[in-house]
Length: 268
Length: 268
Image (cartoon, rainbow over all chains, first blue to last red):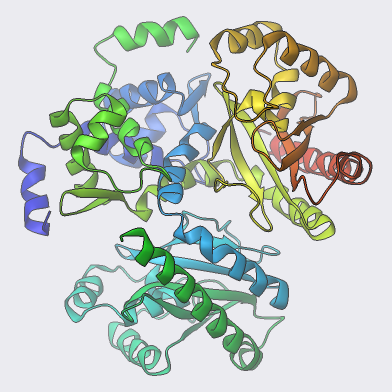
């Protein structure tokens, strides 16, 4: 459907609001909100208490949640929902062996993400030691403007989409170095396009540095970003650019090629 | 809620059937069913075509699916649903560094799973080369009776739960070696309890061999299984038992201890 058709659909009697609300409740659970009462869920989602209750009890009945003394937690069955995407898009798993080689050679973590709204969302990750305060895994979301993969994905957006993005972000200053200015971000994106890679130095978190390159399909279109993140105290900006970047680019090329072959054969 | 309360709840006006159906539609997508029409979804779920259509369009409106010429695919946003569980149960991520050490020492993949109905469901995995015909990742499901982790999880079930399990499985003969007999399975589970580990030799797939050990909480209760899988042509049963098992047990102990500390502090 086109964007207008989708908007009209929401007004139609066919739209299933309780499905929207149910998915909202699942996403209310997070690292900060591991165990929630009905009233917590109501607060986090803006749904009324009776609605939150009905959804939580339905999720419990279906085995996606469980409760103990009126405190709800999600169950592992929820993973099946994410796995439905992963297994139906198993081209990401093709990237894994190349990513593992990269990690074995560098000793640092690497990830692939795509743009989803104003966030990047991780679709593949091979990690070593944890260096960030939050736990990143497939399915994690981070604001695009504060990440190297986000810069790469934004740099290659069509002009209208980039403008729409810029109009809809709420900049947040995560560190002293976070870019919170549209014009400054646009200048950075231009550099990313020129050099075909992006880098972020402690703009999302103190002590975290990362570089990213685009992954392109057979037609040259950027469909994802591939990055490597390091601890700022361990790897200097120069080492990251001179030693890690060439390997990241080489690995990115291999992933792009392997995925292009799979995706073209998939639709034959 | 108790099992009876949950059953009664389904009959009540509070139960949200459209949420059940929406989650069913998401799970209709898989490696074999990557791109589906309304009528495919209707066939796979047993829902009527108009219902399948309303759900697919609602999912598209919410950004969890997209369509091209009336063929629907899931989007990466679906990963957020699984990640809601993973990030709200980040104790699994504690296991990762121990799992990576195991993989570095053995060169083989290892996984953690828990029981969900009659299936095991993967909650953590660190893999090397792919040796199975299907792509295993966090969220994957496999029938408990045909896997080493399943044997370990079943072996420590309370008697009533095990009987319920045995009554509800439909045995399928995946290979010549698959156990499809209740009595034989019970004998195996008894051995698993005695020796504190389980092993499966090409019962799920030709050429695949694996061993598993239980993970126990502070009270000794088994809460998950930890396994290592190898190619049968590369690692003999003897090497698996004499060389891999001790390391698997040692790593399992470390994971159990690390998770026990986290979980006890989590509820203080």
